[in-house]
Image (tube, rainbow, N blue to C red; front, top):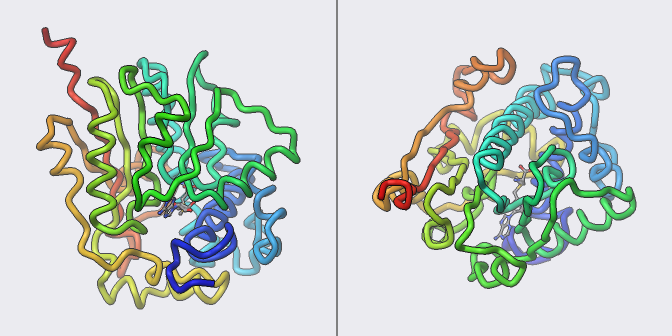
Length: 302
Ligand SMILES: C[S@@+](CC[C@H](N)C(=O)[O-])C[C@H]1O[C@@H](n2cnc3c(N)ncnc32)[C@H](O)[C@@H]1O
């Protein structure tokens, strides 16, 4: 295995393992009595993987339950994030976005579990090994997508737009994009190229939601008990996977290109849903923000 967390083999190492961690969190969320998001595929990814097969997929399987920093509060965070971005994508699809592009889709099963309007296409971009594992598990289950689904194996640190176009993406038709839990693993220049690409490929009226995390290099993050527990409980050393370069300000970049942008915190949505993580002292989620950006529709102005 290579030292670069992005180039190691398979879904069960480096950054690929983060996709399994989020899937386990979604499985736990699915079976909560007060669930915010339901993904009945999620637990199958965990059972099909080797080491993670022993990870919990129900909160009842966690000895300390909700007091566990990883499978309690952090998993709830992923449940809330899934719900908020499900709502965003469905809203955009109902407002005319015909193409849904998931950047760093991981084991997200939105193409299979959301009730899309007719004739929508979901493009899933991720590393080839992650998409191959996902495809195998879903095929074994006989899962049928509820929209046209195109898996696009790419490395987002390199040129990836040609693969998307080849898979059938039409830059002339409205689109909704999501970069959920992925930008923080990309080098600064790759994030800048990604924003540039979305701006180039998105026609007016299209939208992009993305997650940012401020302060990933701070000692508060590196020494936070949450990240110590992800490392010790499941061998996922998140701060070591976060890209070490200072982050670009993609919200300002998009605003400068004529997009309207809104930054929200997860806690805004906890209030809205009356479920989810609440702020705490030395909060590892304190720098997380979800950004919602819409490209100005100049055709409508004329
Ligand atoms: C934390 S997971 C999030 C997955 C998904 N968005 C979700 O919430 O379930 C991060 C995903 O980003 C993908 N990723 C990270 N770096 C990547 C790269 N350079 N190219 C393509 N995908 C990448 C990983 O393989 C992984 O599936």
